[in-house]
Length: 380
Image (cartoon, helix red, strand yellow):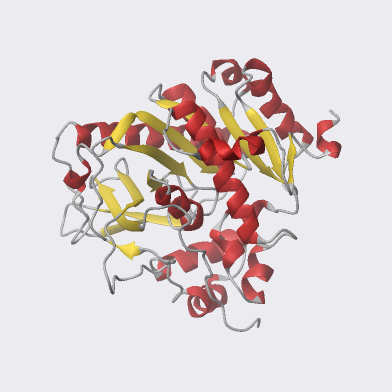
């Protein structure tokens, strides 16, 4: 049913090699769980992590996609369960006396911490530390936490909108939960930088103390895709430590109207061609009309999943299940997305790099990029 699948993620484009590790803090649902992407010291023969960390995530993807867990989860496990990410697992952290800028990344509905490895590893290769959260508001395909008693795992499955409840109120509650998690993640890095001992409760977990003195918390940004995109916008309201946001194909529906005037910092909206609605673009324009540094661009030939790792899976099965491919080459889409994000972050985090060479993308100038939205959505 589609042949062999492989995950053909491109190698790092930046000057740094990239390592990654999982971090879990706390023994309750109110703790934090994320995959950390960071500049590393290369080592020969380093282990490459699995893209789908556990079989349970295949069950979660089956549930979210509306397919039977009985047949879809084993099929996904066979097809993509052995795919690995081209990164060094738990590689030695590369210290930086001037401090790396920090990105907190928020995933989309039905996703989890590894689904955006392509964009996260590219940002880390250019000298960012990226913490890709796995949210515990029941919006992830699946997640878990480890209880203090014998490190028992407590799984949190994906939850659909409860019957009889209006979707806006359910999703609004979730987006506030998610934005609070993003703010807590930034506070966690403040604690680490201050020298506070923060145990990683995962077995043989990555030692967070190595990050001390190597992260510049004055240069922190929030980034996310879809539900994570609107989470990033809300996080700007909740946490003044975030200096800007990058929202990939943001799903603006869950955010209440009263909060739009309170978004204090600039946002870069990088939209795909096939997902946005006139109502959603109008909400983005409410922000760009208030702040000239807020930008809206659209990547032509892309679909909603083009900004996820699913676009890099070969074979027909995943395309059939997840509708992951647009007409634009996924490698080109990733280049546009990462380069526009880097140019925006240099501008608003005062990063001393050469990312200004991609400034034209922020105005929607370039191959396969247009400013704001396609005409059918811009003519509001």
